[in-house]
Image 1 (cartoon, rainbow, N blue to C red):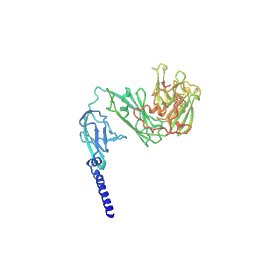
Image 2 (cartoon, rainbow, N blue to C red):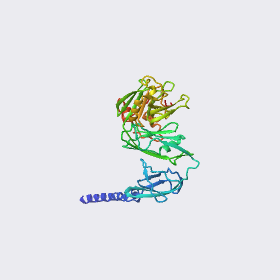
Image 3 (cartoon, rainbow, N blue to C red):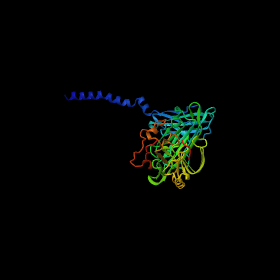
Image 4 (cartoon, rainbow, N blue to C red):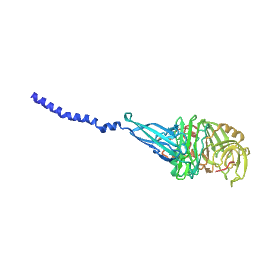
Length: 422
């Protein structure tokens, strides 16, 4: 009996042994070893020996089974070209446009599992100057070394307008960095003549904003090309906002959410009404001249002091000593906000370009693009104007303040819906 039991135990052990060996053998299969240690697969653009490459070119790289660990771009004299990666890592953007009719070499390295690397080198040549292509004139309304208000949008204008099918390519070449981070999005006007950038909330005082409109040499549609590479870095100053109410003919001036002063105003008379809406201070002039001789409703030339532009169409806040008797009770202007000399001078010392200005209760609504109108719509409507996907989590901060427009970092007041200076 004891012998039979030992034989049965031995047979079970022998039968089980091949299963154990098979399991060990599977770990050593050539295919399994290869899957664990295979080098990453790398694709780089522009392709090797590519020619006629735009000077706006970026070094693109896609990798499978690894990640990009090194990118180096050099010109045909061996000098390294400074570049930095996009946030999504899809490409490396040269710090300046490449030069026409030059040869460049990109060397990209990717690292995969167990430290295996793949390096790919590609050499390409840039195109000649545009030739018959029309240059799109661009203007970046964000200067360097300035202090802007908390509602300052980044604005780029185009002439001629950008067609809808080309807007995504253009938008991808518009860069905004904020420190501390406060992400936003671009939004296009329907006519394609202007694109504006803002965050869901007003900028926080002290924020540094760096902007680059990297459009030089960028193919735009079939027949056009970008004209220039423009950039600027500036900071956000103290929070100031102006509320103008046609019903009371008063302007309330806030700083950091606190009321500083109420100022009597005279707005546009019924035949030339001021626009109701949410806008920002665009320019400031100690002295300027309004000339409306070419306007059917105008016909005057007048010198004014302490003028602050609100719209492209010519609506300003400015000193108007001739209407002091009407300020606070009657609208007599050609669309501007008239204040006394004393109040206009005081305002010039308080405001910054980019400060929020809200006008309500007049006969007409502010037209989109008549000035910098990024805050004249709510966030959801603004984000719809982006030609690229907007991060789902990018939302305004919900505040319970009685005057949200007067608090930096908070959301905008609900929007209310061109005239020449006067």
